[in-house]
Amino acid sequence: MSKPIPAPSADTREFWDACGRGELLYQVCRSCARVQFYPRRHCAACQAGELEWRRSAGLGAVYSHTTVYRAPTPAFKADVPYVIALVDLDEGFRMMVNILGCAPSAVAIGSRMRIVFRPTEGGVALPQGELV
Image (tube, rainbow, N blue to C red; front, side, top):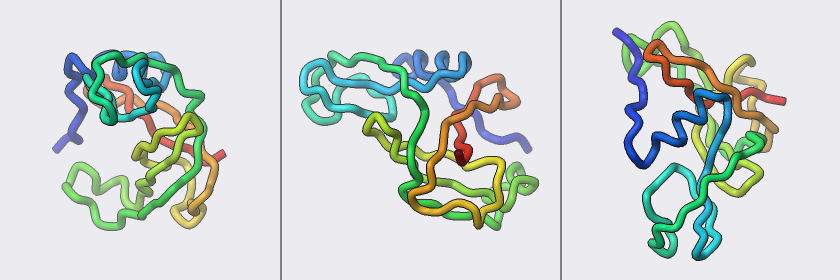
């Protein structure tokens, strides 16, 4: 069994293309200046359709996290245990990532991390986190 991979849509294609280049993009509304993530067609605050893509430095802090010890499907069995974290990026948006390259006990609320990109079997690069 293989892991699920994202299916880019018209609203998210630019985001996924940037991930393939090793860049993390987010949106800012030109009308109300709200920062938003995940990519959408309209601003979640004012509903304006005037969104601008910006490049994130990819640095942030762990807001919350959990360690997965029981794989949700057989495709993830080899990965356990792994850490899933909500991360507050320095530009003002929050995203969920897997934290890679460390013991689960090393991750704490407030830990600084950076976004890295890992290719999937389907060729899409996924944003992931590493502690810094």
